[in-house]
Length: 248
Ligand code: ADP
Image (cartoon, rainbow, N blue to C red; front, side, top):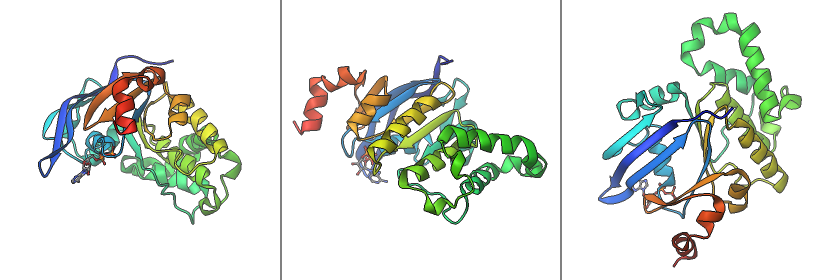
């Protein structure tokens, strides 16, 4: 049940570092329930864009809206996270000494607003949520194992699971398949596709085969703005995109 209307809206966003425009009049619209891939050469501004959305970097100009109600430029990082924007960095950061289950439990507890009721809810709602997330990320059979023994791919899925504990509306995912085996990449594609619809998902990824396997719409960033946007076939055959990728 894919919803419609934008979940995220960036208009004419710019930011400079020491006079260098890392983001330059960027316009981007992500629809609710969409799975969008962002590609672009090194230095294109992908990380800076994610930093702007999550409130880590303040743009010099432009506007950033979450849904139609939330002006993100008036909010700080924790406030933006609480609105339902979850970010996964490239390297998995799970708690290796804890079990898979405990990692998910802890991810729930990180939402401080739940602390007063967490103890009471632990028996019911939270347990149900953990079970659901374990199924979603395919780690149900490993829930009592220590996270440290998981494969690289399984750690990435666990970390996505930890984000899902907070029921984010928008997930920002940075290079999810870096270092994964073919099989792990296939499972990650299935996982991200299964999240779309329930969540909006923005994936920054270098692996073009992977991007092709998951994205309906691809946005190509270059020099801090959108160079091309559309289906993978459309952007891959765009002469400007080819020039940027081949070094022109
Ligand atoms: P990408 O993620 O697409 O590789 P980035 O967003 O990391 O691109 O970087 C875009 C440009 O902005 C690069 O030229 C980078 O060197 C520069 N940049 C990013 N963050 C900073 C910063 N905090 N200070 C100075 N320059 C930065």
